Length: 292
Image 1 (cartoon, rainbow, N blue to C red):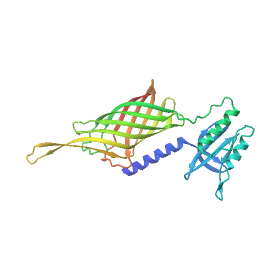
Image 2: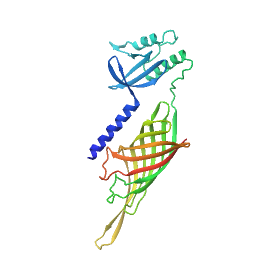
Image 3: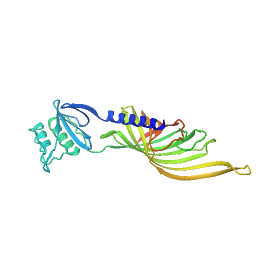
Image 4: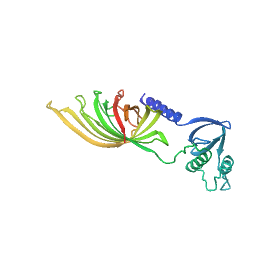
């Protein structure tokens, strides 16, 4: 059952990422999911298929594929002829144009700007944003041995990095979490983790994201109480650290509030490469993050 839940969550995660990151087009009878790189008098669209890049341009409602076939070891550079025809009388030269995403983006930006004085170029520069957040919550430490299924408090901080211009739906998050012992479960853990987030709902007021915890280093301390032959209680402290790649998947939302965001999260719902203890996942947090 756990494997089935993990598979369902992973499929839903993938479908969400695919459907929101690109749009479907029918070109010459072929249905293609393409990403829009440049939008203007000429649009540039692209994607990878079977590990091969394919590029398309759109002008006056018509689509043209940019190709560079190889015959007897020599590239034919048909894409240059196509672009020359579409940008005739612009004065732009394709002589040194390479068929790469960066090269095509720059060329089409230059053309759009030459024919439209109000055109705003799609910048090639990275527009990194960073955010710092603090949070608190509760967890049942589902990926440890927790015989009583005790609920424990947690606190943490996180540092988020995103590119608001080129990759606005994607983010990398470095996070520190500290969980505390409770009466029924004398377990504490300090954890550093690397996370990836995909924001499948994105607006000016709220982002909803899927979170994948990719790599963790956890240092934990557990106190185990046992009984010796004289029926005396004996406490044994077990400490240690470990590095894992658990692929833990969760969900969350950032809600615009003041100069930052109120953050809600349901963490570590399923683990794809790590076993749980069979209990229902309880790992909720509430926090606030600031733009740096």
